[in-house]
Image 1 (cartoon, rainbow, N blue to C red):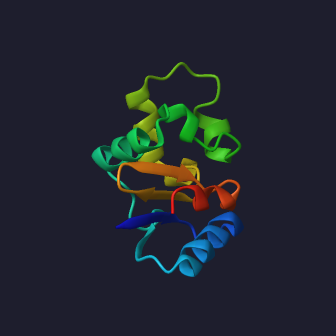
Image 2: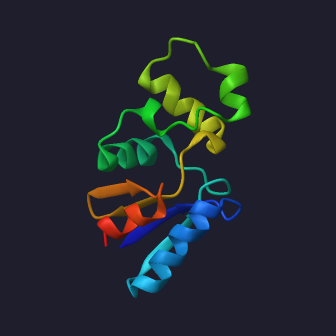
Length: 113
């Protein structure tokens, strides 16, 4: 099953959702601001993406700039920050089987379908 970690207020996330809707494949929408992934789930997504936690952080978010920017943080601390402040998670993320992509640009999603 395909999953999309989606923020309806984000235009890129909406474009990514549209790509999935037009694909004809079944998928699950996870509104990650409402249903925040736990540590295990976030680590699994990172593994599927093949990324370090810092690479999934939206570094231009106000909360990042005010509370975390410039600090030396472990991967675990970065993951906890994303769970505590899910707006920090880059979006949209589409997961299919053991692979995942960030839909920036949204056309990246086509690479996983």
